[in-house]
Amino acid sequence: MMRRSAALIGAFVAVLLLALLTGPTGAGATDSQAVTVEAPTVPQARTAPQERGGPFTDVGASHPFAAAIAWMSDEGISTGFGDGTFQPAAAVSRQAMAAFMFRLDGQPAGNWLAAADDFPDVGTSHPFAESIGWMSTEGISTGFGDGTFRPGAPVTRQAMAAFMFRLDGQPAGNWLAGANDFSDVGGGHAFAESIGWMALEGISTGFDDGTFRPTDPVSRQAMAAFMRRFDDTDKQVSAGTGHTCGVAFDAAWCWGNNAGDHLGDGGVATNARVPQRTVGLDSGVTAVTSSISHSCAVADGDVYCWGGNNNNGQLGHDNDELVAVPTLVGGLSGTATEVAVGLQHTCAIVDGAAWCWGRAGRLGIGENTQSTTPLQVVGLTSGVTDISAGEDHTCALVSGGVQCWGSNGNGQLGDDSTTLRQSPVAADGLATGVTTVAVGRNHSCAVQSGAALCWGSNSDGQLGDDSDVNQRDVPTAVVGLSSGVTDINGGTRHTCAVVNGGAQCWGEGRFGAIGDGTDTDRPTPTAVTGLSSGVVSVTAGARQSCASTGRVAWCWGSGALGSGDTSATPSSDVPVRVLWG
Image 1 (tube, helix red, strand yellow):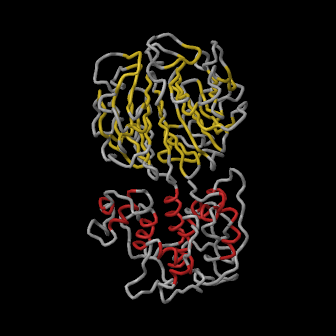
Image 2 (cartoon, helix red, strand yellow):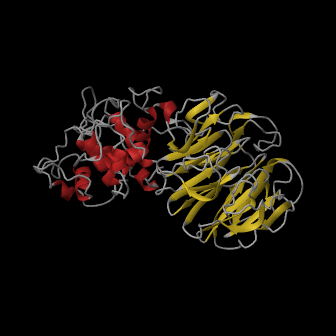
């Protein structure tokens, strides 16, 4: 996620002329020297940083840090050296670190030069004076005990952790626990809090031998990776059946079983144990969603779909042909903001209106007609802000109220009936105050004024009402969740929610999808182990669940966990971290 505004683009040329990060043209340039820099490289649309490797002659597409280094260039954080190199293995100097971080923060306006005089070895005439002065004024660095800043000295990994922690506002959290991830740090280390924060926020995982090496210099390639991870604060995850997809670094990723070309990689992988980028969706991605048959994403306001089942035209390509890579859905004039996938149908929000395509009876178009191209849902031409699709039904949030359509055998439309509806009908009691709507296989849920309500099938306790009633035909309060609920999501037979920043799940537990360390069904909300705070979103699939804390995604259950587990069927009844590339 980019924090820099459009105004930064206009200032980019001036930034380059400052040339705080590169050396003079020719060999032997160092970060500490004044520079002449190359013109910025403008990336081609939808060209992945991993594939480009950036504009640097010493960083090819196969370089392990290619994506992060290209991102540094794209974002104007580093333009490399005057000879066209990036020098990835070289140590980062303290003055270069100041410039990197100043640019990462969007080069905020201020009288930063004055603070450069705080250090006798800097001063207002120093080429890095503004960045260093900004670091001093913002409390990111106070220099050394002798009053110096030592601009040309290398940055140690522990100092880098402290700088980034302070840049993030020193957020509250049990960060000391993360320091124990490293055998050479621990809770008693002088930099334990900031290093632990780095670990728990997924910014650094340390070295393969379990160490952090706090006093080692930071290499430029490692710094690129750290900053890219720091900046990506809006990771999203969508759990399907056998596979999971997500959004990270503005790109779409999928992992898990690829038997039905669900991963969008052209059929290259059989089973992906960690996230793999989908073909072509390497930038501008704002949403992705998965189901048993297919997946879809929104990128730059357009909808793309792919996957192993298109027998009802649910991919929206005006045919019933399968596609193994993301392919544009035609017929949607306007800007798409959200997409939802069911078993054999798909829906999207475009300029506030709802559109659906695929299997007959699920589209909300007022008639029992199949369509291989998008059709507008009856009556939902404006005011739609959220949409979610189940096996054979769909619900939408329209001007603060919930409307649903499609199959209704389990009362999943919430209209106090079990009658199939070809057009949207209002869910009982949910006309106003609703902020989120979510649909499982045959049940539905919503958040109204901070409280969670669910309706439809209750075969495994997925409604969370602590009853053995098989179904509810109207929205029913979830036990214990009368306030503090900010997100909710339905799976096949279980449901998860974010409650006061923590993750809770209920319903079927036999695959470990509740995340409480057991495989026990839970008829009421149960806290997910280790995720008591900082959670911003949740997702429930067939056998797995996932949550995002912004920078870090976690999954639990069985199947597509994205943790790198190489067993035949990866499983965990507590959350494991998703290992993004």
